[in-house]
Image (cartoon, rainbow, N blue to C red; front, side, top):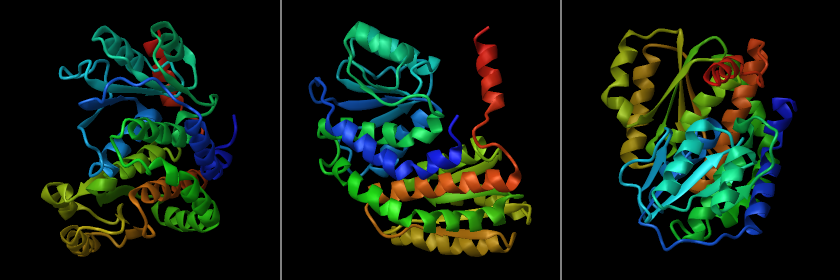
Length: 328
């Protein structure tokens, strides 16, 4: 298994490969859909969540992310169903695929192979076939760019969105040493803390990606929530917090002035409970660049935390155990 360090370092080049793959992949489309349902779990599912939140102001139809065994009742032949499973053997995603076929939908899939690819061939459904054999969480670029490409092909988001990937990938490559160093410095302050991460709504699902990476790579339990929602509930919990906890405030630009004010007030409230209130500032840029920058930063953070805490970032024994038990 390739070390997680190499997989994270490869992320900008992975984006370039994903972009090239999508540029050469075409598929037969149904009529313009009235809604989109994205099905996927774990490292495959987070891409759909990030797309639906970060590009909400561009999406011209409702987008629902399903992480279950069946589609919502409203899903019909007029819905675009995207099924993403890196391995192609994720049982929840396969179940949703079969549910879509039964309802008369024609799913569009993203996978490296497995049973899902076999089903796509059987039911003549298009599938973006991506390289396999790696931890799904390390291959975020393929699922994310694939979903953007599918939505852009239908004209459901700004046509130019996927076209900027190459430019941003090269920009990330030039910034990589700087990003990794900043992530290492942050990891040193977080390594023995209960981490709570906060971002504005648009990028709250990126904070969720960070949480998932810290769960799997760093073997840490942590929390994440959106601002302003956390101001209406979780903020009260901080009244009983102490220096066992650390808060990471993820700043993006531009930010709604009222959200910006909430972050400023939040900083003061949290600092009264713990000295570990830490900021991550994303450079100014488009929503697509912001997502890619923050995902890469979070991946490096999870790797540095794993190193500092003495864990193998690739190993996921609890998930392996659960899959074995489910297979009995």
